[in-house]
Amino acid sequence: MELRDKVALITGGSSGLGRATALALAAEGVEVVVADVDEAGGRAVAEQVGGHFVACDVSSFAANVALVGAAVDLTGGIDIAYLNAGVVTGFGIGPEFDVERYKKVMGINLDGVIYGTHAVLPALKARGGGAIVVTASLAGLTAVPFDPIYAASKAAVVGLARSLGPALAVDNVTYNAICPAFAESKIVEPIREVLAAQGVELIPAETVAATVLRIITGGATGEAWFVQPAREPAPFMFRNVPGPGKGNAARPEAI
View (cartoon, rainbow, N blue to C red):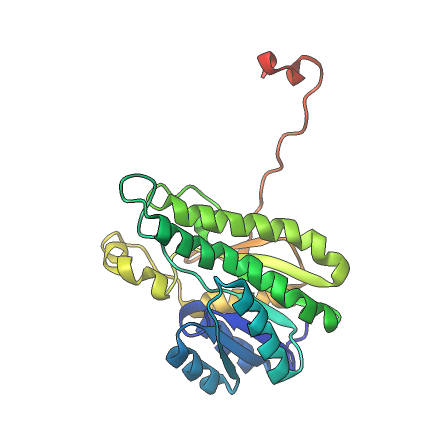
C-alpha cells in the first residue's frame, strides 16, 4: 500500500503507541483520525498531526459503529485502521479476581478489537480494500504467569489476526497483529520502577510505530509481528499443529 493521501483511523491514539503511529503516518502524508476516551490528549494529537479527533469508548459496540461513521463523514473514507486501545489488568485468577475489572479489561483489549474490526470493514471494502493492524503483545505469544488475564486477552487478539488474515484476503483487506514487549506507553506506568529495577529495556514507541507502517505497506496478512529490544521486528513463526494420527495412534489409549 502507498501511504500518501490515505486515511487512517487509530484507536487509543492519545498517547504511547497510538500517538507515535499517528505522527509516523501523518509524516507519510496520511490523514489521521484519532480516537480515544482521553479527549484532551486525543485532541492534542489530532491537532499535532493536522487530523481529526473522535471520542470513543471502544468497549461499546455502538460507539465503534458511531466512530467509523464519524470518521467517514470527516474524511470521505478509511483505508487503514490501527486498533490499538488497551489496558493492563493488575489482578489474576484467585482471591484478587474482580469480575467488573475483568469485564473492563476484556471489553477494551478484546471486544474493542472485534467491535472495531466489524465496524470498520465496510468502510475499507467501500474503498476497494485496505489494512487493519491490531495491537496484541508479546504476552499473546508466550506464557505470562504474573498476568494471565492480560495474556489471555492478547492471545485472543493474535488468534483473531491469524484467522481473519486469510479470511479477508478475498476483500483485499490485510489483517495483522503487532506484538511488542514492554514499550513506552501508559500501560507500563504502574510497573515502570519494577521493570527498571530488573533491567528491562523499554522499546521506544517510535520503534513500534515504524513496525506498524512496515506491516501496513508490506502486503502480508494473518501475521503476528514481534517487537523486541535490539532485535529486528519480524513475523513470529508459529509451529504447525500435529495432524491426525493413523491406525492405533488415533485411539485414546494410544495417545
